[in-house]
Image 1 (cartoon, helix red, strand yellow):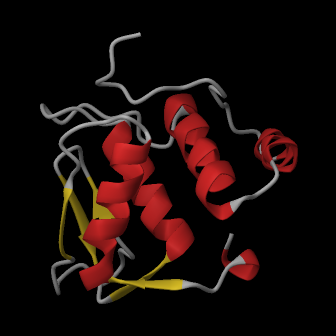
Image 2 (image 1 turned 90 degrees about the vertical axis):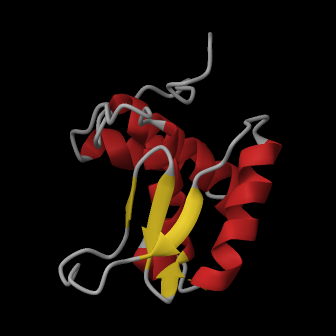
Length: 127
C-alpha cells in the first residue's frame, strides 16, 4: 500500500477520522486514539477493540489497517489477527475510503496466498 498513498494522518486528527468512519458504517462506540508508547520501537501502530495506538503521524492506509483490527477484536481480547475476517474488513475499508479497486485488491490478496472473507462484518455486530 505504501507506494500508492503517501498521505499521513496526524494523531490529533485520527480520532475524528475514526469516529466518522465508525459512524458511517453504522457502528457505535468507536475505539479511542492513544499515543503509541515510546518503547514500541518496532511497531508502527497497534489496536484492539477499545483503543488504537498511533505515533504522531501515521500513513492513512495504516490507520485503516488498525481500524480493521479494532473491528475484528472483542473487548475480552479475542482477535482475528491477520485472518480472513480481518483481511475482508481491511479490503472493504480500502475500497470505501481510499477508493481502491476491489477486484484488483482481491486478486493481490489471493496471489499472496492470503485467505479473505469478502463479506466480513465487524465481529461484534449481530448478523
